[in-house]
Image 1 (cartoon, rainbow, N blue to C red):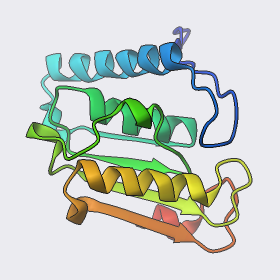
Image 2 (cartoon, one colour):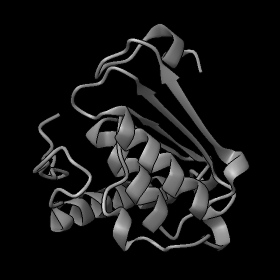
Image 3 (cartoon, rainbow, N blue to C red):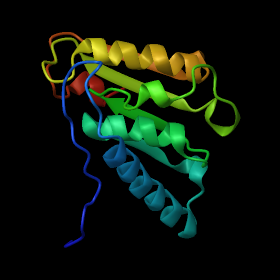
Length: 153
């Protein structure tokens, strides 16, 4: 539709201690938050909006959810990680985000976003939100892709 897509963030490395593009991540999250605001102006209550994505999109969805002021319906995060996790709170968050449902899914054979990243992400998420609302599913033999089982969740 000839629209600029300035939601780019750079991935520098594939280890837990790799440098992260903080400016790019925050700018991309601001762009998603602007989309949420636009939908709200169009009459969609924020509590009916679900963020979701695969890989980089899933990472952005998780970060945006944790940094927005809007109460969202939930997050679906596939084959991803939690960016800027060290800058997030160390304990439970309060307010509108505490009881949001999060579905996270990861292949156990993913060479790009290893299962370890998904595991570290879910460990962090359950310290931030109600652990009962966090679902983490692994898919045997799945690489950096999706599968029918994942799509049916």
